[in-house]
Amino acid sequence: MNINLLDNAEAKQLQQLIIEAEHIVICAHKSPDGDALGSSLAWKSYLNQIGKTDVTVCMPDAYPDFLQWLPEANTVLRYDKNPEKVQETFNRADLVCCLDFNQYARVEAMRSTLEGCKAKRILIDHHLEPQTDNAITISQPNMSSTSEMIFYIISQLGGYNDMTKDCAQCIYCGMMTDTGGFTYNSTRPEIYFVIGQLLSKGIDKDNIYNRVFHNYSVNALRFRAHIIANKMKVVNELHASYFIVTKEDMHRFHFIKGDLEGVVNSPLQIKGLKLNVPEGAFYVFPDVSSFFGKTLRGRTINNASDFSLYLLEEAGVATVTGEAFGDPKCIRLSYAASEEELRKAIARIKESLQG
Image 1: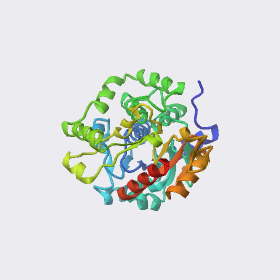
Image 2 (image 1 turned 60 degrees about the horizontal axis):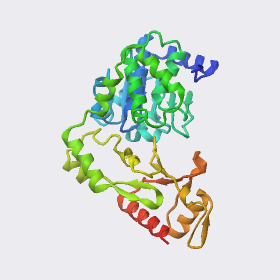
Image 3 (image 1 turned 90 degrees about the vertical axis):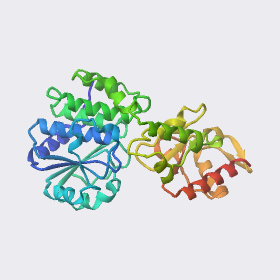
């Protein structure tokens, strides 16, 4: 099985950048999830393994509470807590590794620090439309996670034999969390080859699963129940569902980072719901194929493009056909808007589809 992500020239270039670097920074996106943190800590472990002693992981803000057990997680520098220290670390760096984000905007408040850094940059990510003004851009949207990519890269650079159990745990956690415990985006055989290789390093996959998915506080469980019982709305016309969580909700249930991890996927358990799960952007992709061939207000809907145009003209809501994103049965809806605007948009869509 060929698991090399890089051609020979790219591999040599990456190796040379690492060899020449003395002060390395690894960073990931705002609100780092299991993949962002897992891939970053695994990459740090590998760099330490090959003799790079000055390697710092910097995050824009907090990672979920249930990831605190990850090896070296307590060494992460947070920009929101110590911007001066993070700025100083970037200023000293001669190599910055950007993991699990495709655009610099995704580090938000830390963006000026990242873009102002004079160090060479490496981007390793599995999301669409990566920023390419880097020394090396390694983009693989077909991958389950950035953590999976990190495994392949470490292996290609000759690091698998000396890979530590700690490194393997971080990779597995990243892959597991970005696939919902391998329940979606995880059908490629290579994923299970990687899992086998990680198990060979002595990781306890059941223990990792329990630490992530069976580790909620009483408040967190009650918050989740409240969302499902009182906040979730189902839009049958779109075979979709949504809910809106307010600051008041978060205060009421004493929210801490990670309490709602994965709850966005809960509506996928509803029979008949058809929705693609967003992996790193403010979009959802409802399946609208049930409308193909039907007539709405005198218009025949033949495809997603017709449906998007219908919503624009009849509901005043702008969407984008999913054809441009690899799924012609879907439309793309952005939820980068206020709660009030989202409610109005959903109401307009629902009214337009009822005749």
